[in-house]
Image 1 (tube, rainbow, N blue to C red):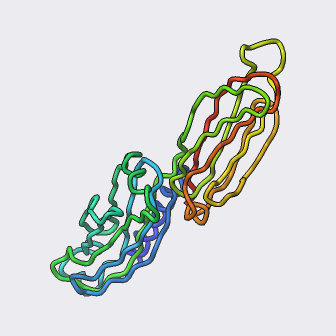
Image 2: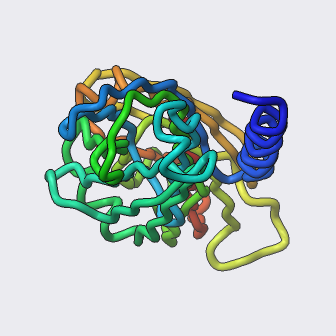
Length: 259
């Protein structure tokens, strides 16, 4: 590659890198690929998509020397394809480097595929677009949304003397679970609301992740791993009142994927 081509490629890499770093609510990954001249030559990388948002696949590559006489430098064409976990094609695009593909995924679609583990999407780069094919190498990058979402927002009422309520939530993929509970006496009075005990339990592991006792507002944060999810994705939030006063409150469960 000549000096102009090298500078162009460096500029493209820098622009794409800065673009990916700027996405605070996404995760990005990069892989090198090398394709033969065969029409079936392809490279694929797999990943999970936990949240609604934009899936972005980007590929950059060097124009093969032997094809430079037939087309301008950098005009060698490849094809990139985004494959859903069920094997169907979500989107595809052909073109010269750099090549970018975008796909908008809804939370319903993401949750549907994440109902079973592992729900792996695939990004493929295929050497089948140019009429005169050659060996080619480059890099493929993908970016997936990792937005925080609310799994539950529910009211509760507890009598005293050990009365408790359990709220099951389903964790779709590995990530951080955040539980926030606030309450007051029922009916509201001058006295401060009594302390409650909040527990976070994984029934499949027969394990209590965390337990806190205190005044309103109480907060628990817990990292849920892929190994945890292999034993079940149902997590229980347990709220218990060991005091005499009746209380009424609200529990919120937030989730931030961390693939």
